Image 1 (tube, helix red, strand yellow):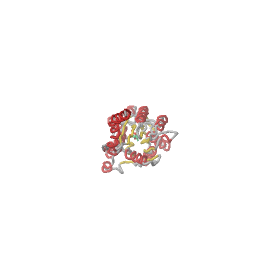
Image 2 (tube, helix red, strand yellow; image 1 turned 90 degrees about the vertical axis):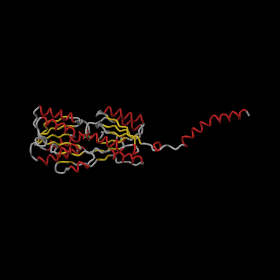
Image 3 (spheres, helix red, strand yellow; image 1 turned 135 degrees about the vertical axis):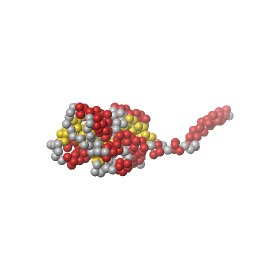
Image 4 (cartoon, protein in one colour; image 1 turned 180 degrees about the vertical axis):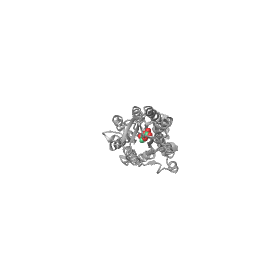
Length: 327
Ligand code: GYE
């Protein structure tokens, strides 16, 4: 009898606990709780250029809560060490996917091995990585930078034929795919033309401030040049400021070639300051979103995807084209 009472007492005491335990399943989740957001850690190079800012915005817009994502964005300020730390933080947080826009091509083996061990798929965007074990990343999407360089070289050939060219070359971040491909393109052009001469070459890190600083140095040294090959738009803006300060007219005294085709630069084609802009498309957000959707369905995206790109000069550009573009 005593034993039965004790059991009953235990049951009465445990009842609230049992009810509480059942409660979670019984009470319907609020709409926000029902919808599980996919968590994406995005290690971004930095905010060095118009291209980069358009790229970040595209990722934020596509991988938004409305579309079912929580995006954790880390700006590495153009430093690879910071990207490695960011990726380790993403691993510790247990994100669902890692998206990496790599500063440089080399040096990713260790941290991507760690991501693979944690079972987190890694999507590489924009620049490429150089790695022996390609199973360390799921897929890559970006531009063919070597082809972009080739486009600029063909344009120069057509425009100038046998005329002597003295080229000032403003490079991007040394070791980044965008720099490597665009520089290889120009090097091939230099090797193929006796009338082309490299007057100056240095890295302006893809920033307007450094582009201006380098150009001011070139002008102060009295270097002879008639072409500037700037590996992005922002360095070209800096170069234009330096030329104007020195009393030169870009477009008339100097032919300026740039890469990216952001809207500010395209307006400078219409005003005659930039002669050629080779397109590089930063709108990778929706592309990454489609890749994640495929992976969520258990499908395999293509390992490498190159984005279609073109070029702009005075012959094919209008205000309407500029305003119809997303950057
Ligand atoms: O050309 C430049 C940016 O990697 C394609 O990086 C990108 C390059 C782009 O800073 O403006």
